[in-house]
Amino acid sequence: MRRPVALRLQAALGTLALAAATGVVLAMPEAAAAAGGATGYATQNGGTTGGAGGQTVRATTGTAIHQALCGRADSTTPITIEVEGTINHGNTSKVSGDSCSTAADKIELKQISNVTIVGVGSGAVFDQLGIHIRESSNIIIQNVTVRNVRKSGSPTSNGGDAIGMESDVRNVWVDHTTLEASGGESAGFDGLFDMKDNTQYVTLSYSVLRNSGRGGLIGSSESDRSNGYVTFHHNKYENIDSRTPLLRGGTSHIYNNHYAGLNESGINSRAGAKARVDSNYFEDSKDVLGTFYTDQAGYWQVAGNIFDNVTWSEPGDDTNPAGPDPRSNTTVSIPYSYALDDASCVPAVVAATAGANKGLKVSDGSCAPQNPDPTPTDPDPTDPTEPSPDPTDPTDPPSGTNLSLGAGADGSSKASGTSYGNVRDGDPATHWSPAGTTGSVSVKWPSPTTVSKVRVREAAGSEGAIRSYRLVDHGTGRVLATGSGAGVAGFPAVSLTKLTLEITGASGTPKVAEFETYAG
Image (cartoon, rainbow, N blue to C red; front, top):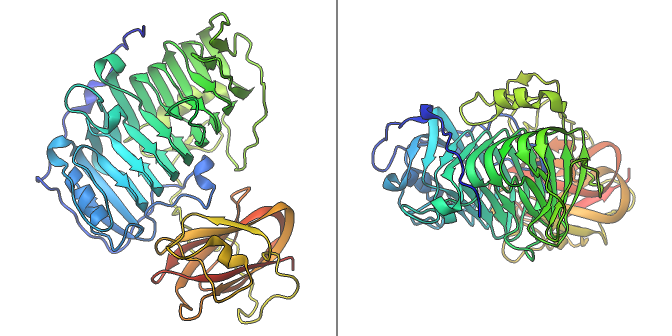
């Protein structure tokens, strides 16, 4: 039996004034990207840019959010939706359209991509209304509060999850949010941050999760092991019974979080999951790390954590706590760079940065909060800090062997009738297109391969559609070159196993006939 969760909600939230019944949607000429840039695993698999490069609209109701999604040219057209006010059942209705699939009882991000939802002005509060991400990719949610979402009682929304992701979700960055409930499952609430059914490349950063029975999970059952590559950093978990998070399979990176008042258990690694747990601060809690409530083991790598007034259970048939002297039982390699604060300063840094309406401050690893980097998530191709394309005449193909021939290929999405493999088959009559105007395609090798030059060839009749692109070392997330238009780009030789072409801007749907790679 779970103990009831003590209610310590902030009285300062108050009630925000509602706008008109359907809200106000104001079109802006061009979207400003979410402040700062994605971090953690959301930077992998082509990266997470949300609605960067698209239109910006303002919404003050849930209906207006749905109208903005449904008013796009198609389901992949980039858009940034700035939200202000209280979004609830009373002002959220279903909207129909070719570019959306919405519902009246939740904010529905279903079968779409390239969307940013960001709180602005006096703040955005999703009151008893959850955010549901399903069969979608490249989503950013930033600077919003989601509270008191129920799965039983009245009103209900999103299965009781504040933010829930399921069914082939890729590349989601949730940042500077406040996710809270007013009790546990018996009071009608479920998870604050749930991922299941093949959800991958997700980051939760600088957020507050509190006053709930369940913090969140990765995987809905011991057999749901298709999820993973999730980063949790600089978050505050406060007054949570369990699942901070619960991991079933997959890989997670959990660093610089502050845990206070975990009543029953904390990071629960099960069913083959692997978690790297770096420089977190745990206090006034019980069983903060281990495998609990199952006999299917999970694993962890630990370093630099502080355990302050933490109690540990005795091992049992379905309880395997990592403490009282936590030791690593696996190793986890992290493919991206990150700045690690010392655990001793994590409570202060997280208090100054985490949650909605905190100014979007971040940490650079110096234990001192910083203002967010104003650089857009989607770099300007002319930014002098980014690598420049090789000045080689784009009509002059590189010499040597095209290393893409016979390599593997994958990507972020593909339009009907196209294939990732068409970009490395040596046949310019075949092509790949993303399911929209932007997307990524990669060539990959079974062992490290040295590359220093790339030639991108567009299909006949679509020349000039690519307006801007990036070449990214998939393993490290490093941007090797940026440019505009197809042609030849060069960069210092790098050894890698996967090279990604990210199309960040296009006129219409781009068609990549060949993504050729060369050693020199």
